[in-house]
Length: 217
Image: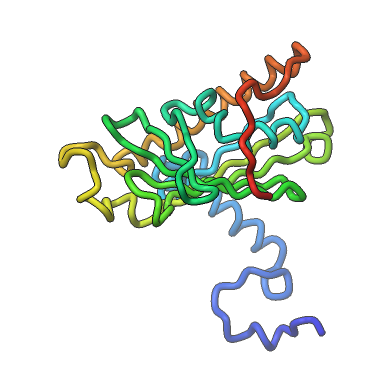
């Protein structure tokens, strides 16, 4: 049974055609739309980026699922190796001296979604989350290739290191100090990914040149 207007009547602030005339609805949408937005308004709590990649979606997804490819397209994460914990890897983040980064990849091939769970300094609480989805561009843009969506959320730990005793030095920069630059940094990384994949796809080369570790899907 569908929801009736009476069941929503006591919820303030809803904007629905049943209670808001079309001209008023359009006027409200115009008020909510600005010509300019501050960086904080757009990227304060969430950092979404997206990009078209002229490469088949299955190849893009496979590339992202290979943790060794972070050495290629990311700005600073390098040399991941398996830990004694199944599925957990540890590498280096060159943004800060002597900083270890732990990583777990959680892919879903059916929906072509991939979550990177990671954290600096320790692998027990992987609170840094990077969410990817690869869309077939033919379905959403009407042309071959892929659309890559990438979202990061501003976890409260970005504001304060929850494990300061694990930092290699007390004056080491904290990853959260860089949050205002996340959009630019991630955009550069996504553009790196695009350039690598488009170059190899156009040349008929394998998408990945790094060995492909097993990733549970």
